[in-house]
Image (tube, rainbow, N blue to C red; front, side, top):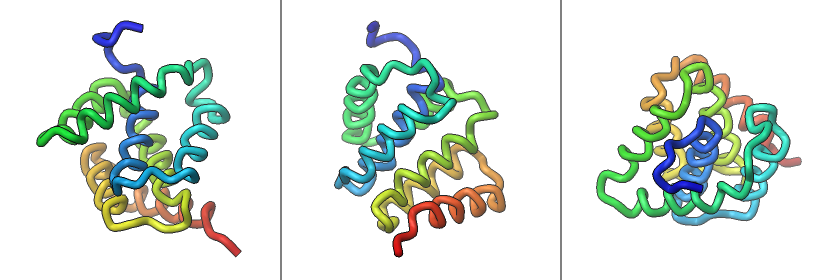
Length: 139
């Protein structure tokens, strides 16, 4: 795989999920399982090669270590992701953040950044967030 190749829309979705998981500097097993299940089960990832995940993870981790890395990551994601998938990207991000049953402060701030970067309507974002909360409640 060419490291200089532009990201695909699927790469961008995977990178965003990884970034949400890494945002609190504690990547939990439940978050990794959520990412893996999304990639293996959701139609938006049909035909995606999971062997690309290590490259996406390295790219995200490298960018998050840089001073303006988050802005650079969002730029790559916006370039690769068609607008019709912005809500999908946010829904996947919310699911990863909620995977362990709670959203930490850093994850909440990351979701806010994603919402702003993707210019999501606040009402639509709230509905997506509520759905993620409902799916990840425990008894």
